[in-house]
Image (cartoon, rainbow, N blue to C red; front, side, top):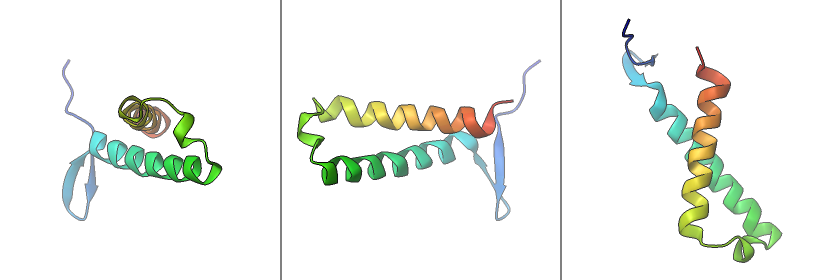
Amino acid sequence: MFERAPSIDIIGSFFPVWMLCVLGGLILTFAARSVFLKAGIESELGPRIVIYPSMLTLFACGIWLLFFRY
């Protein structure tokens, strides 16, 4: 009934998949921020304390659904 948490073997050590998804979401959030800065629209986004953590969550959950849905 209960399964183990999904994990990936990286160089002989098992990492939980959610850690890799959060890392990917963080990288994508920084990339999106640089795009916003180059486009000059970051100042019009709203409260950054809400926008960037929300983007991180969106990207991390999207990566999870894209690659690791069972």
